[in-house]
Image 1 (cartoon, each protein chain N blue to C red):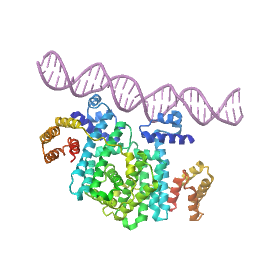
Image 2: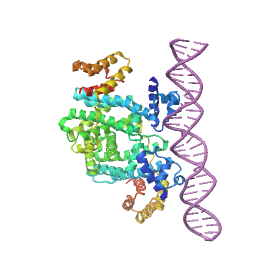
Image 3: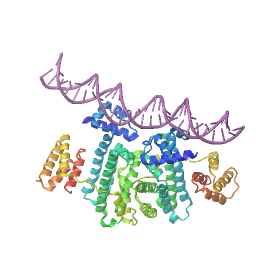
Image 4: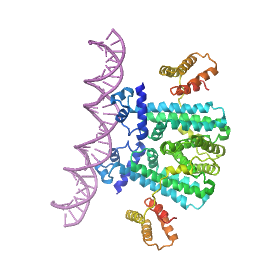
Length: 277
Length: 277
DNA sequence: TTGACAAATGACCGGTTAGTCATTACTATA
DNA sequence: TATAGTAATGACTAACCGGTCATTTGTCAA
């Protein structure tokens, strides 16, 4: 299990530098200080490795963003927090962000594309929710267009510090983009992306997780984790899913306990969706 | 010579679909209906092919954009024309645009990266010129930031019709982005990209072409072209470079004659720079 | 010390790659 | 028709790819 993490870390370094296809399993094993056979004890194939990397990081990033959007009460600061969190994530996981940007449009694998679309739609959903909270009816005709402007800012400005080593003043960047977003949100009258246009792109998201799947994931995480607070919280949350006994406020508190543990972010996201928090 | 064009066309189709690295020379030759050996009679290597493709298309695209920026008199319509022309180019050369977007951040080759940066800087220069013409002193603190917003709009909105088959209403798209750009230009107060920040990214462009290089390129094009008007215009322009005799207005007219010929766009761009039009 | 089991190794496999070059096919002139 | 010179071919090479598996190494309890 620890070997798996080592490989993921070392492989990510190479992928970020050279790209996925240009990196051979040989290179990965040499860089990890293990043999080729050992690699295939941890992963069935090279493809399985990159899918695991995408899941590992995108789960964290999307649930971080979703948490900000659904949990920030102060609407004045929501947009700022959104940009700040997003760019923090990209900066913290800069190797992954590089890989993500590099391979986003490459299409070597069906499952890969599916995963990318899946997380892209999740993120889009969070952004839409934020826009609706912030501007309400004001942007009813322009909200889908606004999503694309926000995504445009995110990708273009992150490329600056990812690939050109521009020093990152997170506070200034967030302030700057908040101003821009507000200007566009409040004064745009000619949207390009209408509701009809977005339909083409939007197949239904099958993101409803069944109770059984949820329990399975929770059990898996309980096994994985050693930290006592997170482990206990998860056990209580699992019992709550099986048989509701606690008041909502207690459940919310338990979720708070686990939300910052890197292994729990996804479970935390799924539970928030489950309880419609 | 005609063989070279065939290979470039057919290879571009495959690159757009599969990416550069995932496309083998074998596939290219099969798709072109020629043998493997014939490929290497036209190109020294696979790398030389992609570099040729980039030059061929980027010369056209950047000179198209530069022409709009330097030659549109009506400032009311300049921004609209800019977006319209840019997206027309991307749409017309959609296979190249796909390749360009896909491989932009990949870094398999030093020369490749250098070329990309070179054309990127040329385009940035044109955009900056346009912004200064349109908004003048008003954007002195925010103009570098504005460049990045425009580039963000360009890449994000072009991905829509390039990869998601969204129907392209060029007029609406241009109008929509004109409105957005004007909003940002006139009301932004917090730029992220300052003049100091841009310095890091900006090495001096060595785009001054010597008179000898210019003449060489012109001679080459004169050989290449059969259309009489363009050929004669080029011959006169070459004589003008060697020994100035015509009035500027005549030179301008001759440039008009050649500017829409796909082989002449780059020469036309170089000559405009040479005469500071 | 022995034996049983799991972990790790790297030579090896079939397949594919970019690039080469001896051979052949074609074309134009005499 | 004969010949010289160019264009085109595709079998071939050496290197590398992802993935496998018989073998070795390491780690326990007995």
